[in-house]
Length: 454
Ligand code: UDX
Image (cartoon, rainbow, N blue to C red):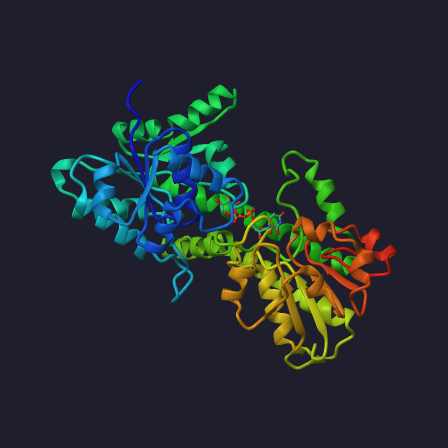
């Protein structure tokens, strides 16, 4: 067949690193670029700078095969790639809810200046609608006009913990293009994924569309997922006052295929590097475009999500029979074990993690808090240096008046209530993710509180 395009991935964060490695695994020649010298050195040495199951093995294999390289040089990257995927971060702006596009601007204009032949620049980062057009203008401004460099937009949908699988076996490909050439280049860049689906007799729909739609698909999907989580957490709030059980309610409504049973786990809410910031940026952008009203409900989605955190504080105060002062519950003199610091299990990511936020709330209310997490300790220490960290689950729980499970790691789900019971001063537990079997804990003499459960 036709020779495969050479692929460059600019920005070796979560997204770019995973894509670069997985596309090399599919046989493409790949170059990963980043300005962070340390990160590039680690990747070149075969070390993935974050926790993602299966990824490091693939990195080592493809480095050894010579298909995968990393560099910090934009000219070299420009020279290498036929297709350049833009994978840099778009963090929440410090001055508001919108997205900060300065990394995109820097990398696109820098790349464009160094290009010496026609290439396709593909946006993958999550961005406000309208960014692809702006990127096209940037390219027009900085790339030599005679090259005819083009832009496309192709959002990604990877979930931490399942990222390798999500890249190799995505459930759809979205391609925002405005030329035949861009479309065929993007197709060639995804031929590996399409071939794999064909080999495995799997359906892999490709949605070819315009820039705006492609950009919106990503934020719409994340807004929907966030809404689903907040919906079930809102039901949890109602269950709490009505005496219902949200886990049974979720199971019962989830049998309706129109609703589906996934993403209906009530608990301390959603966190991570995507959902919280994406729904805020989406609202900010809609506002700018004059459609703020259409997304006003996302503000409510955010509020419901935040209320889950204070709900844990309130449950803790109830269980510990603490007084409520004018500034909220006073937990001074109590010892609380917080199990979980990452925003979800099988990840070391603590960005906007409900667990860490709750730990900070408990500490602020005066409690002596000990945090333990199987993978997130390093990042948690950096994000919340004022909290106290325990080296093991046993150390965290020892002499506690209350245990709070706030991330549903298997270690916590499978913890033995009898064994833990011998360590604590009082057998009280808050199951912030509804991940424990209440009967088991109650039998072992624990006072149990779930989220939205009687
Ligand atoms: C998410 C999207 O799923 C993904 O498609 C997108 O590309 C990036 O953002 P990720 O951030 O890895 O992926 O996490 P996800 O598994 O979606 O979970 C997000 C948060 O929601 C977690 O904090 C999780 O604990 C919470 N959640 C999820 C719930 O509280 N209840 C649920 O039922 C599901």
